[in-house]
Image (cartoon, rainbow, N blue to C red):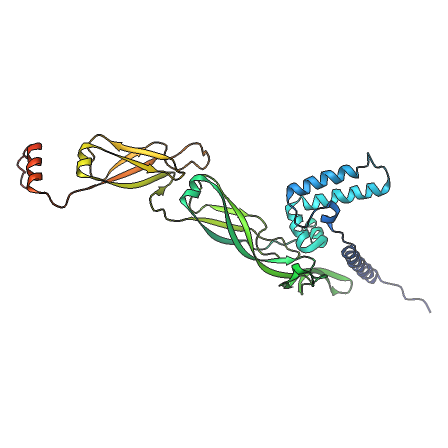
Length: 342
């Protein structure tokens, strides 16, 4: 009796199954032997850019093949180079921190999704917008407790619980010898917790109410997903003295009748503490506006240039006059001309 021959379709199906099993095994092996990239560079977890750069330079010189031709040094040099390449890339670094090398490899294949951006408002003073500087803001967000899956008793893992379900790409058989990739929601093996994160908000001189400051990858974390951005919208608090309009500042002041007629002077304490002297020796009209050049807000694109300060003057008249005052005014002012009929 002749032996049954395998059809091309069956052979292809068997090859697909073998390939999928091999890929799964390789991924599993990779995860088992995954190395600590921070340890390879000799820095603490979460090290900043300058610290990583310094450590990379030190270790790459130590194991450079030109100085150490042995195979072990070559291997360590390659590990240091690869570790720095990942941790020096902001996207790869956050993916490694929250999802390990598996997430990094998916990112390299273009299979990583990005989380939603988070919008928030931050109150700021007119002084901060004038002088510039750095303010602190607190955001409450979910973070991945990296390493707590295998070391749940670690002190840093207190308060950690299971992360939200993850989307995984799986191979599903849809027919004889036919497979397709599709995403399925699976239970996460990682631990997460919510915490208050303090971020430094850099306010540039001349920024305006409603401007936005973006913090990449600072939104909620999820294993294997690139975090979205936190977008802070600046909301200027009402100032007790100045009112801003574009790049100009406006202020109100009052003078008495005598000052309105004979002249007046006023010192204004500005937003950075310097003094501005304003006034006139001429007659001031009711609600007259005086323009002081270059004493407004710094320009956003040219902080060395400024808008203008506008001073609106209200004249405060006396509520009553004594007979003596009336006689004195009569002697000073000429009689009024007869008024025409309205």
